[in-house]
Image 1 (spheres, rainbow over the protein chains, first blue to last red):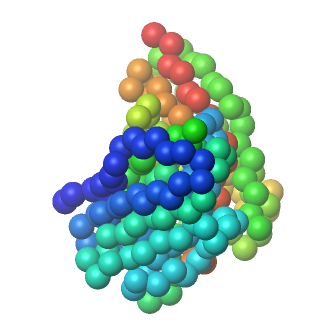
Image 2: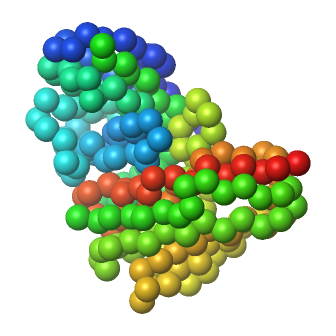
Length: 116
Length: 113
């Protein structure tokens, strides 16, 4: 069983630019969530995707957007990058059957984004 | 929204001793409480979780207790080993909710040889 894989592992961008991060969910999982982890902090929920639609969003502005594809992989897009967007971005997947589910997330190793 | 407080921020124990990490949560609707271990350069790894219909759960050297009335839950690690050194995060959520997991700020557990 393959786990959650993310790419790239590290990325440096300039303020104002746009970035796309990618995630492949664990085999058998149909839901993908994205989290932002600032240095020395716990992860913060950005949003969740199920059946290619966003359902469930944390306190993040609209310049954070995403996609989920038919194979359950996902992308996180951030527009107009700010210095405070520098963080580790984590993708997590789990299985959802019908209603929402926060049970049993498996996390990837993350993408370290640095905005200069 | 949910708020999770975690203590201590750093915990140093001798190898073989026990370690206890405590968390409190604010939203009485939360009913799912996982614990994650994060090693350097890796993502969080689920080590144990508990649902609010259970007061305690054990898995070998790891146990979690939940007090719903007081809104706090704790992680207990017995017979600590060097490989237990890591950052541990507690989290709370409504298991069937749309708001994801709310994490504490983490505890850096250091096992002294």
